[in-house]
Length: 167
Image (cartoon, one colour):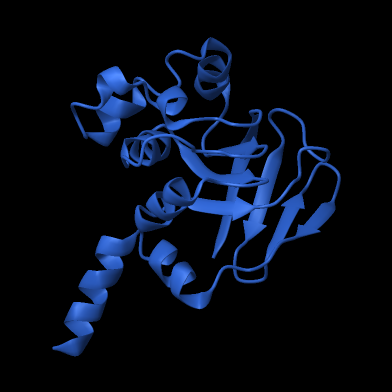
């Protein structure tokens, strides 16, 4: 599975309430949530609005801490985020991302990218490529089952596939 995205750099400890403020959690429509993604973080919101799609979020440590609701993942996907590379993720956010088909990779490439750079990922081989510098960064490839879940768009699709194969 190959993906690409244009870089937006964010810092450490980006919580789910920063991604989608709690006042918008009464709805779960992804397109509606995307209109409010990073609403209280003007700098990141501006980057998202000005960056070509698809977007690659490059983050530091502790991305996605806070609430366990899936709204943050849904909002990011609908806003055009193709994948997130962070030094570390909070466990619930990481699993919500996989379950909803958003690629999340643990790694640190902040020293190799600039805002707006194109970044390419080969998930099967565990390689991140930055074409501007021709830099290749290896990461631990995702387990096969997680790749299958991501390739089909999330856990619901994966479970439907398994159910139809059994009948």
